Image 1 (spheres, rainbow, N blue to C red):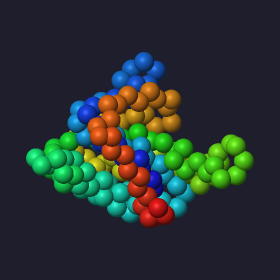
Image 2: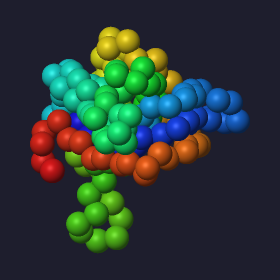
Image 3: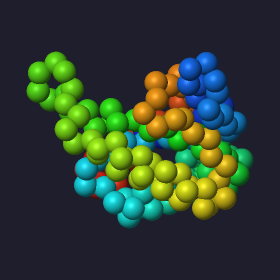
Amino acid sequence: MRAVVQLIKEGSVTVAGKESGAIQKGLLIFLGVTRDDTQQDAVYLADKIVNLRIFPDHDDKMNLSLIDIHGEALIVSQFTLYGDCRKGRRPSYSKAAAPEKAEELYSFFITQVEGFGVRVGTGIFQAMMEVRLINDGPVTLLLDSHKSF
């Protein structure tokens, strides 16, 4: 399971002209699921993300977590995180999970984040989405539950 995590001041997702999710200060999490992922990957990644000490403290040092600041999370599914661009000019998505499995683990990941008391906004699985955000920092991190990078 992969995530692109961005520190944001606010963010929202719109599908077909209707807002599906919006948050204030917190994290925008683009989440990709691979064929080999299990619920353990979702548990690991949710715990890792909500406890990352990437928010500034009173001395402006990255020392506080999403939980510490009572921040929110906007979670958006994104199979393209498993796009392999090493060969040719068209990405291969062969490592991405089948939609049924991906949706199940995406939903499970959301419940894991909510289990930490974090308010969550979401996109709509497999929909064409418009994602708006005000990046803070900017701070953008890449995480992989298989620790491949």
